Length: 235
Ligand SMILES: Cc1cc2nc3c(=O)[nH]c(=O)nc-3n(C[C@H](O)[C@H](O)[C@H](O)COP(=O)(O)O)c2cc1C
Image (spheres, rainbow, N blue to C red):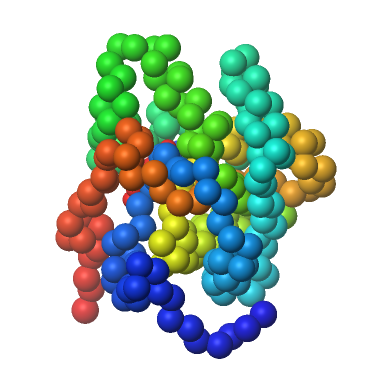
C-alpha cells in the first residue's frame, strides 16, 4: 500500500476536504458504467486508512459486481417477497423516540415523495424499499462484515469509520454510494451465497458507482439540524 500524498482530480477540479464532505450524499440511482479497477483500488486504499480500536482493522469487505451481483439481487428479492429476514444485528425503527423518530419520518417522507409514492400506498412502499435489493442499479456493492467481539458496539463503530472513509473517497473521486442497513437483513443468504464463514457478521453494505443524477431517487437532499442541537460546549 502506498502512503504517497496525491490530489484527486475529476472534471479538471480538485475537491477541498470541505467540498468532499458536502458533495457526499446518499445516491439512490446509478449509471451501469463500472468503476475502473485502479480507481476502485485507490478508494479501497483510502478506506483502509480508517481508524479502529487498538488498530484491529476489523472490516472484512466483500465487493460484488457483474453477473454475481445480478444473481445476488435475484436471491435478495426472493427473500424480500417472503419477508425472510436473518439480520445479525437488530434494527427496529420503532425504537427511534422523540426528535430521532421525527427525523426518521422526515427522511422516509422525502424518499417516498421523490418517488411519487403516496403515503397509504403499501405496495408502492414495498416496491420502493425493494430498490435497495437491486442496489439502486449500482454496478458494485461493498458488503461490510466484521468479527464478533463482546457486545460488538466498538467493532460496529470501527466499521462505521471505515464506511464513511470509503464514502468520502468515492465522493472525492467523482463517484457516489449509499450505506444500506437493509442489505444486512439478509446476512445469512449473503454469507451462503459468497461462502463467507459463519463467524463473520454483516453490519451493512454500500452500493456504489457513478450516480445517475436524473434518477427519481436522487431528487431528495437531506438537510441537517444546526450544530447547536447536537453539540454542547463545556469550559
Ligand atoms: C449505516 C447506515 C445505513 C443506512 N441504510 C440505508 C438503507 O438501508 N436504505 C436507504 O435508502 N438509506 C440508508 N441509509 C442512508 C440514510 O438514509 C442517509 O444517510 C441519511 O438520510 C442522510 O442523507 P445523506 O446520506 O444523503 O446525507 C443509511 C445510512 C447509514 C449511515
